[in-house]
Length: 319
Ligand SMILES: Cc1cc2nc3c(=O)[nH]c(=O)nc-3n(C[C@H](O)[C@H](O)[C@H](O)COP(=O)(O)O)c2cc1C
Image 1 (cartoon, rainbow, N blue to C red):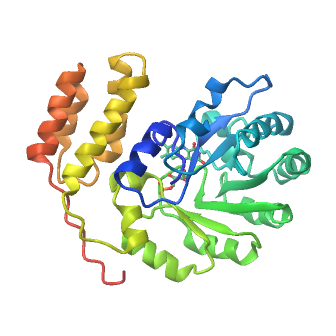
Image 2 (image 1 turned 120 degrees about the vertical axis):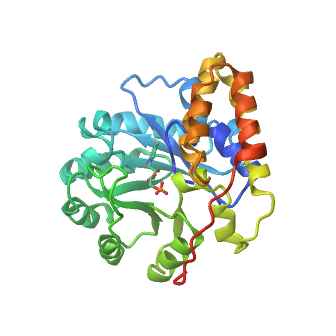
């Protein structure tokens, strides 16, 4: 499961594992390193082992400062993690403009200096998640020969630039060129929306060692299981989605501070939850307008119970 800050937190990951399965592990959404090296458990709550009993997890750090990264990474290894992931992919201007995430990709020398310091000081293994570049693919082709020299457990590639964010298409030719020069295990990530997409990609890139899915496991939570088991005729899909929704609501209701936070959280999820359903824009508007938990649940249950209709998948002869 791909990390999605604000979406795939430990409550989501646990409920997903209970209701659908299909993933071997999740990379957790990033934790930003801080110059204050006294780390409080609250700050790393999302990856505390006791909150992650249902699905194995790899914590992720966003950082451009080796010293800060080392302290946080070693804290996470001390919690029992073998591997920590370094985020070199985040495209958001608030992050990237400070030369963090994908904003660091043009600066090969900074990354080299960072890794020179980090690699000898951390007490576990390191994986890296990258995009093709900040503004252009040239970044990754300058960078790969450098980072490939370090002992990494894997390199996860989302083949878009940071500037693209999530727009436009993934650049599969550039990904193929990356595969040709990387010695480490490579994970592919990006736009796997259907089993057909997965089959096409896995036929083309047979060297890929693992596959990562983000947005499309929120839109179609059966997808990872269909990919791993080959099953495609799953009964009671809508009913199972409703149960998952209920479990999430209860989980957030148990930890978030007040009903408006719970409703905001749930309404945010509908951005992806609504995608597999036939035209439901009006219903989504009504869900978004609810102000009280009872009213929200009533509206959502009406949707699942009587209105929801899954889109028919398009025939895919090449899959
Ligand atoms: C709302 C949102 C939050 C994200 N948060 C993170 C994050 O914390 N760390 C990270 O490496 N990638 C993050 N990503 C990127 C995803 O991990 C993934 O690379 C991207 O969604 C492409 O994969 P997909 O097409 O399967 O969704 C985020 C993406 C979205 C849409």
